[in-house]
Image (cartoon, rainbow, N blue to C red; front, side, top):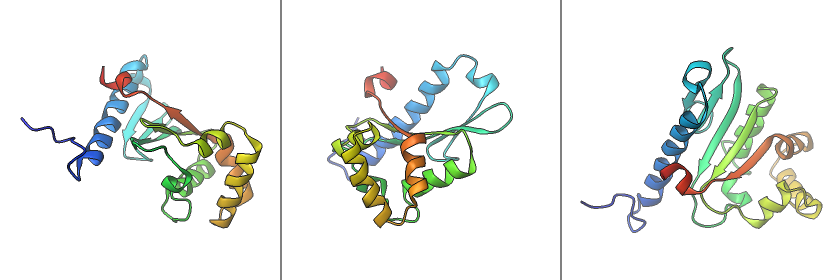
Length: 159
């Protein structure tokens, strides 16, 4: 039987990413006590996984990435009107108190790690790039405050 997730196939990385997205969603269902009773887990609603509370309010929006190279600011498509960071800003504006996360099954690049880790020089550098891409300062602040990166090891969801 052939392995359809081989990286030699053009579809390999996409299939791996989709597989990990599904496994991550399943792991969240399994790990959360009472998850199926109290909360609505909705794949592909808002990002890759949306989690709503009993009243239907969005509580978490999660994007899953499985890049082999370190994740960079450009991977988040800041210049695109449909890019991840624009969608995150829209989600944060429309849903007070929501937690938005990017779950990465690969490395998160140094610039993102430093900027979101509080390094002021890295933050200013990223801030400048986002301003040039058309973001408002208040939205950049929102991103630093309410958008988080979470590194997850594949073994956690596959094992």
